[in-house]
Image 1: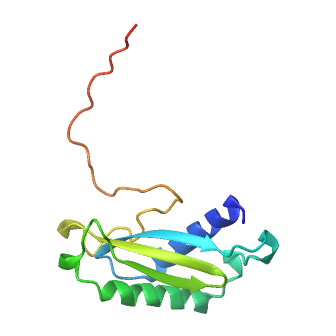
Image 2: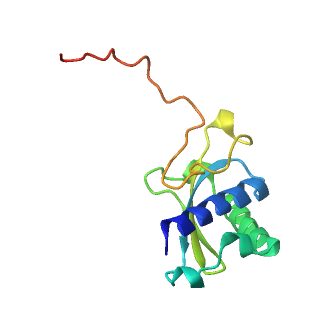
Length: 133
């Protein structure tokens, strides 16, 4: 399986979930793993029909609705697995901060391997750069 196919699946899954899942109490990390078959045998995300994507989104939404934000352990976040075509999709959730609940993005890593942050995590200005020369 090529990295390109995995990247296409990741981006498609993020796009579909972001557009279909209404709940915004959690940030969700996505990990899409297309089947381990040859690239010719792997279904492309564009070939998946809308009803299949709707079923994935509904499964994710029901899972998220069943989570209790107060009881989520940040060191052991809950995960949920769904499948579409020959692809395994693992979702991991973390509660949003109170002021962010109900709004903002659902997906925490819209680009494969990259986490995005919707808030400032800076603790102050950066230290001045000292060139040793």
